[in-house]
Image (cartoon, rainbow, N blue to C red; front, top):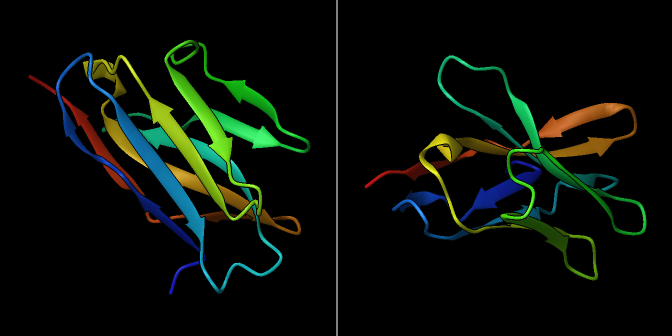
Length: 115
């Protein structure tokens, strides 16, 4: 069982919405979920949104005003609400966490925005 489990990806038309979830599994002891990154074919993995500390958030300029990151009170699940999706949002979305000084990645969930 992997420490981080993503869900919620899929195929959506431009202008549509999706909600991604990243849940910490039973193997996630000592792990802090940081947020979401994405990687499109031929591109490097890039930051989408992170949430840290008391709830400070940071977004990529390309998603500001359209995406919202949040987490549950137990800090065990982080969500990414994606609205007004565009074809350029198509990518594999990865959840990132940190345990000590080590980064921990989920397996990724595909988001495809196409008509």
